[in-house]
Image (cartoon, rainbow, N blue to C red; front, side, top):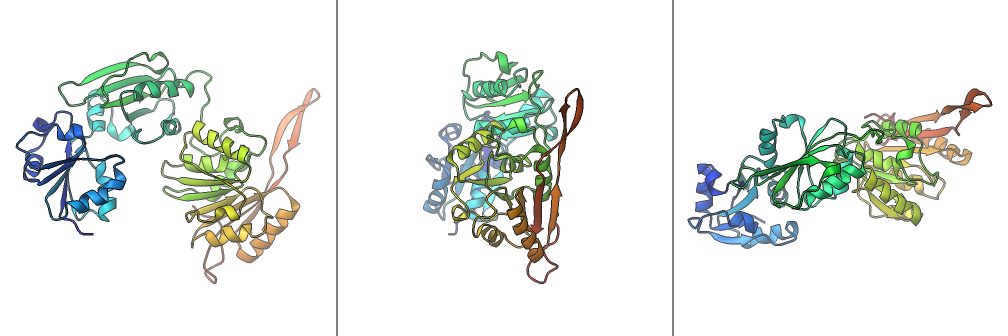
Length: 417
């Protein structure tokens, strides 16, 4: 599908007066003007092109809308910087690349907000809550950090305040900046646990200075969250073994994990917490545990974790290709290891843990055939013994970790990041 070049013009709350001359020229010259109703209303009559409002849902309609105006001069309106959580990314995806796209950015709401607050933008984390679950904010909560949240509407500030208070960040300072750059710009301040402000303007950005309440849980970035962070029924990869397992899986941005035999979902959840673009699918045959995994993912800030309820290997059919696979249970199920190994691409990683002799023997055979590393992990904890203290040994865990290589290319080898 070919298109005449599409121009994307960023526009702010200041409307036409705030646009650069080159942006005004593009809008005057356009035969078709596409945007949200609010954006289109900001244009004067001298922009005489046909005005087309985006339908809802937007993304599925983009290819057809562009195709309907092939050969015409199309100008798409965007809020602020089109390539910063904006329509620009969607258009690049639809067009296949950026060669048919001309982007004329305006200062983003994040730039305006940091200018008003005196915050360095490069040291401020920006998250969009537009069309995204609010629970994803949890993973970004760290004492002393500054966040800018792109709001989805007038009710978002109160929803953010409630989540902060629920997650132990009630003392956090919040500033809601409305209509940034426009004549009706307004700032509202308060703390999350004391937020009583009524809904204001729908066009707002929320600035948060994260302050953890005394005694609230501290959730670090490194793998190995405290076991009590997870709701579980005992089916949980314990903290120290989990940390070693995540190190062997070696998550990297954008990669997909299969977590087979999810239990409480701890491996998939910590994989996704490693980077906001990491993805995971957890496969769990028990419906009660599958529900528990979803609740854990929501509570720990990775609600996008996909939970598949079913028994592997059958439940693996049709899943997207993984960069890594973790098997935490069901190793002796016929065909499971083979199905996971075959699903991996060249360079994909596999890690399997077990505490049983039968599964250990199976991992020994796969280690003999495919190489990698076979490790025994033993953890002991100090516990009271009468009036003294002694060691209580947990069941040792046997772990096999390997990288898939083509036959004759140096074997499977150890897992490397």
